[in-house]
Length: 226
Image (cartoon, rainbow, N blue to C red; front, side, top):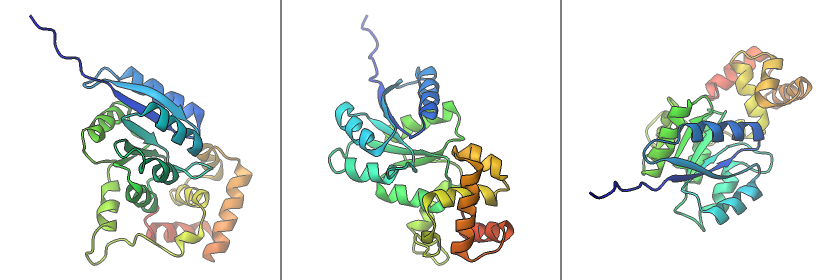
């Protein structure tokens, strides 16, 4: 009687600048790794340079990629890795669900985009699906991609000159502010101080020439940041 064939595990590489988050994702993936095919975490990195070196050395099947990092983020990793390793599949895993972030990383070559609210079971399923060739998105994010690559009237523009005035961190703060988060809650969500949140809000108000958070919320909603 022949033994059943052993399915090769999917090797995953984690890229995120928060070590505690990487540890949590690793634990969740390894806890639920017994699916078919199984998943193993081959390595991790906290910066663009570390990611490029680690992916080149370990040659993973799937890279779970944060969109925003201090030294460039997901798009920078994609730009440096994909030309040399086109076989590696990238799945963005981010706190951001803003249209411009989704569009940018998909244009750079990611196969999917899920938010950090995803469950461990759903994340494992997403890894297996992108490895198998599917495109995977968290609910509502697929519409951003369809709009960006569509020529139909009313499609969301891929580039917004006013939005481009804001830094990545300012957009993160604005998005949470527009959702009704208090400054302290924003600080906790983004791992920054309340004072830094206040500085970012002041900068956004100045750049947008708006007067208060209610106007900012409407401005963010018009640009589908919320």
